[in-house]
Length: 155
Image (spheres, rainbow, N blue to C red):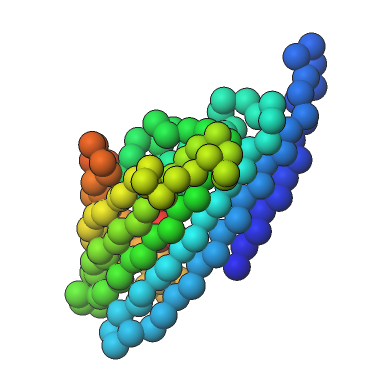
């Protein structure tokens, strides 16, 4: 489990103090020749948070399938499940899905407003010694698709 808590302060004429809190919980289950990964992520950006530091889908690979920042507000909750399986010594694939919501506050969230995200990806192990993967994921949200390319797993 990982908990990030931060206090941010801007200096200058338009100075403002605000808080930003992130909660991350990841759990991994070993299956026969595969891994099932589970994640819960929550974010809160306090009053006075600047636009660029609000909670946002896609900003931390949470709820792939949405352009980073398209859904942005002061509160966010996301849960994801990912199935990871090797194909050969260096190649593998994943299938993933999740749901989440971004709203003005946690009390404004409604199960009827949940946004889904699903997708598939391929993995190539660029470092066998460190077990580091290059990943390419294709995801679908409610009304758009995204491609994610990076080093390391989404979570």
